Length: 345
Image 1 (cartoon, one colour):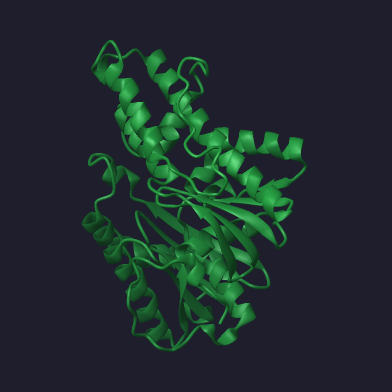
Image 2: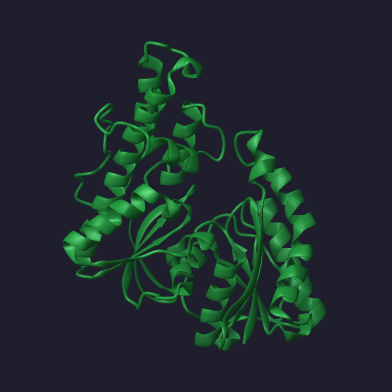
């Protein structure tokens, strides 16, 4: 079975082809980061219009790379939830292709795509495992017993980790996207210069809170003797960045270790854009060596939004239930869709 995946939930347009026998055949991706950079964040209307421009050329590229014709596709999977306008583009492209080619279609939860993306790696984890979904919009700890078998253990009560990265980077004048920039700057910082709070580090649950950490960065910047961020020396910016990154990594690592201990599982999967963070990976690898569990990451190219994870998740669902995809080409976008509502039909 060959499944086409269509990703358009935010500011990446991704199309990919996955074969249940031969694996990932091709994936094509276009990022809108450069376009949104001057605005300091994603502009939904611009994102939607750009998805329209990119979708068909990327489809043609994915087909050419896989040396396939459109009729070779067996089913089409498209992403939900996300930005409503962006989802509308991906859903309409997928359903229009389905109608034109007489192929069944199915909607795939965006977070399920992220959660299963480490299974695309050369050494995929086996079920069950604990998954940390950590991105710009989500920070969740899940127990995963199989495709569609997800139990929410904890989640952020306010800002997601990736959101805290971007907002704190903006406070330091690092621009957008801020996560990679503040991570790189932190490499040059003194870990002892600023001891920032670790929110909910010692709570007896698996929830997170990062708005207070972001506020702590703001307070440090405002109380700085130079007052204006543009006048703060680069070394002090690096020190602040290091204090922030260390705080957020400590919290994420501790919660993951506690979730593994609570469930008795020995496999941890990291998914989402923040999963590419080098400091987080180093901290989790160190904890894994000490606590004797194994940690799995998606390939770096699959940490951010991409069509491969949607095609793969669609293929996994269709292997379990071939009737999950339908030739019903009417659709509604779902900007919000709790992951724990996802079941294997």
